[in-house]
Length: 339
Image 1 (cartoon, rainbow, N blue to C red):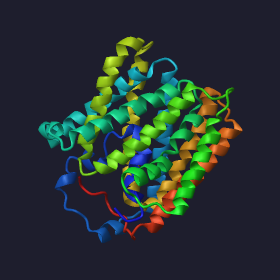
Image 2: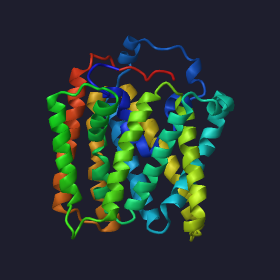
Image 3: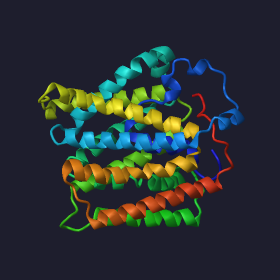
Image 4: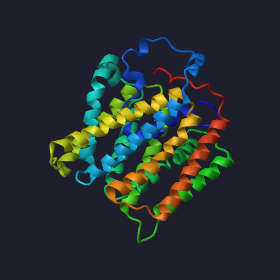
């Protein structure tokens, strides 16, 4: 890792957290058999317009997934949604794990940390679907966009990251944006906002642990993550089970995992085709799509405190990202390492 902070390596995880099923580096069964490209050859294959297009598409698909999750959450409880989503993801993962080796997935290094990461992810996903049942989509997304701000704070406190006064200022400003978006008054503040805030904090903790386990193959990390979520869903679902009203409700519940899978492939391909500093800012279109889908699908009209808070959070997040890019050593954009 470069001396400036998390930088490019955690960007894909940041965007794709709730849907981090697998990356295209192991979707291709022949990927590990191909010779590694040199940085120069990878740079020659850059296609910045295509990279931007893929990132914009990924953000749109993530937003569709969020809107679909909120629509389903109005009729089904979070554990049931998580159970269906995780089961669909594991069905995709099984043949991939078979190629890697099931024993390797079971006898994994640092199992306690892996289990802790999986638990954080599972609880965070449940928090998201629980809060969007009651909150406007744009409100929930605003809280989650503060994730990179929390990551910077956690990295300084627990990983010994050196954070200068400029980024500390950005962290403080970002927290001000969170407070404004939360609207902490007796008339508007309630437990759905608290759940969303808790989910975004768990989100950041998940990212920090993911960085510590970055040597683990993606498919194995995803299997632990989805397997843990499935078990938690199965344990909780008898208490909240609602029989799907129609057959396509079941299909839509499973579709959450499929759409997320396509989106994360787009994110990874985007980062291969263009520098992270070019495509990452487009990820903040998440808040734009959240406002659009919230208005068109759920008749949610954003209130000004949320909009002001969102602008502050996005500004602070972008400053932190570009500051880390500036402090990092020059990097020739290249394909992610074969893990």
